[in-house]
Amino acid sequence: MNFQNLHSSNYNYDLMLNESHPVNYSSNYNYDLVDITRQSLQVIFFQRFKILLDGFQTQNSIKFSAARDDMIQILRDLNEILGTEKKFLLGVWLNSAKSAASNVLESHIMEQNARNQITLWGPTGEIVDYANKQWSGVVSSYFLPRWTLFLDYLNTSLATNTSFDQNKYNTDVLNNVEKPFTYSLETYPDTPSGDSYQIAKKLYQYWIPKVSASQNLSPFATLS
Image (tube, rainbow, N blue to C red; front, side):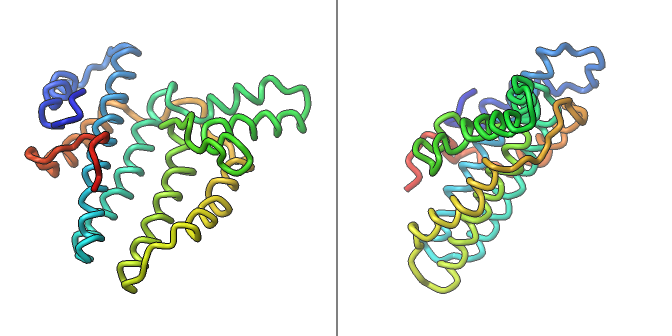
């Protein structure tokens, strides 16, 4: 995947999303299709983040709002495509952890540890996101609410012309998003749902035309 220019990677997509639905496609094809869709959405997300920061820094509320809305939609779309492949399901991870328990209390402890490992990695985020995973369930219940809260804070700062309160945000996100996810007992599917090909094709047709071919889309590029 060429992160420097998403359009140069479209050839890979074009090969996989051909004219006919590959009814008998292999599990490897399905995984690769979901993974390249995941990577593409990640790159577009970082592009939108750069646009959002520019809108924030220049106090352009229209640019900021458009980028914010796209970022939220990308996270929802990401969760949807990840849900079509077993290897990207949070439920598989949690059920595997709970299966090692001999009673309900142990099951809760195993689940808490499994959730903590892929998020906070410590009681209060000592190594937060060190082992983060882009999985269906993690995106919808952890990354989406966390990004939504962050974007709400930025939006408030922009609307009121006040500084972003990093310390307040850190406390808020820890207590209202990160810790609750770690201690939650919400269950998640451990079997895929949806047609990977059709969903990937839908997302490709929607997002790729919206991407500027001339913009550096590297998620590793400086965001300033």
